[in-house]
Image (cartoon, rainbow, N blue to C red; front, side, top):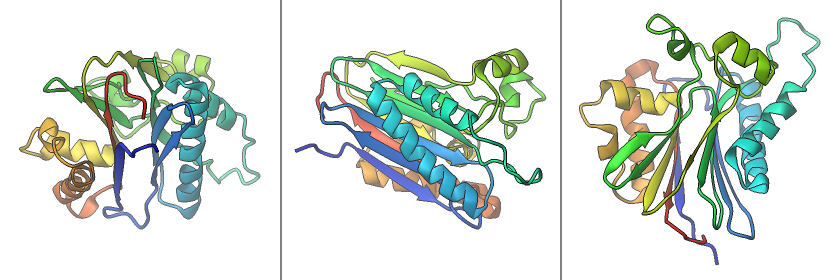
Length: 244
């Protein structure tokens, strides 16, 4: 029987509804895909779409046994959507990050937008992703909340690269030679902890998975005050050579 090695927590913050979503897909051969999406906006349509898109990303990443292949398949699916009949109605979109572990393969992580992945291993915590936003593309004046890539965008990979200098979907690979704890986080979770907490981000990670996830999002919302964004995390324990 497969044991659960992950935990998630979401907090609505000061928003009218929760538009972040997480999903985990486990296949019979032991592949696991972990996805976190941060929907842009606060409408019911955005909330519904983001929840469905999170499950699609996790399912495709698990099927491909690779984070980039799965996220690119999802990105291409949504790029092909027709525009709505009402020109003033925006298509929903979201920042997305997905990580995949598969037997005999390294950890793969892929993203579009500013949702992040961190890996805590060997006493250090490293950010694996590089935000797709204007602060990255136009430092130091670009705004962090202006995304340069997102799931649901109708821009092709070539168009994103030509305009912003990075691919629509980027990825990294990590070989695990020891225990590692993976953290996926929306900007509403990591921004307050990174920028406003006197406690280093790595100090939030030790402990029971469920307690860590709940404590992280509660701290993020408290640090943000009345204007807190949705805050969401997905935390997973990864072991070298383990078949979950």
